[in-house]
Image 1 (cartoon, helix red, strand yellow):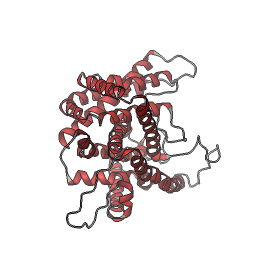
Image 2 (tube, rainbow, N blue to C red):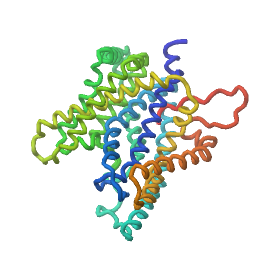
Image 3 (cartoon, rainbow, N blue to C red):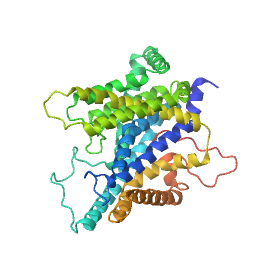
Image 4 (tube, rainbow, N blue to C red):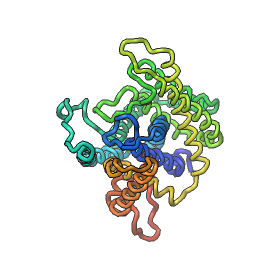
Length: 407
């Protein structure tokens, strides 16, 4: 079997598990937000817990960059297997169409839960936003912004792929990129190089705060520069990595070193986040901002490479349990926000330990969402639509479902 065929058909169980981990961790992260001691979430619990906000900040450093790196890897695999037309058709079906179908339903449910939360705490319906109706700059994508961002990245990847066919007919540029990635990975300089574009973006944007990290493009139809640079770099890295997946073995051996570095850098990020003063419009960034802008992206990439390496070490083989959660994670993430918020509303006024309430929300919402997956997705056409696989009765000898390319 040729190397080309190997890369198009090989199953990467560990990376699929990492993709699912990033999505499921996002659900848990949103479940912490009602316990924040600062008012940035529509539901506020009577028992705030700063450690839960700290946990949110830690996962916020790396989670979506990790996701987009895996998305880029599987996107190149899909293009490698199906070609441009098949790639575009698949992504329109499994990414664009779910965004169009589910966003209105999720937005309506989100508004309903926000009104319910306000009625339980103040007895009044919250007033409409002052800026009036929806527009290209105020469109609230909620948590479905990751689907919208993926569409931008897929489009950009196809444009660059087409240009490479025109200006790089002999493949010299691509081979140079492959060689550069390999040299940097083996020299363990890749985190520094991958961090550099985002570090520059952070430093030269006066409004950036270490607390927020990469600004998620959840409002408006034009993603921020930070999102394009940060998530685009991650996606591009994953895209190039699929061209030489043997590099995964390198991080498989070095994952403890990368994660130790990630923990140290995260500690520095947290210290800077708590101590950073508000930005001053028009003023030159202070020297401390240079340190923060450099440390945060390095934390992103040490976490990302360390977690990929850890997954390659412990999750390389197939597991039915891991497979189940990997298959269900896309559906769970799409539907989770109003369900999680409803759980937060229910317990918000209870005089109960914050961590007990968080656990109740986590277990209760996850159980409910898994029931919906099992009953209305896994063995139905919805499962085939969203993930390309539909479990249920099969004819004897039928081929196994193909892996999901990348949600």
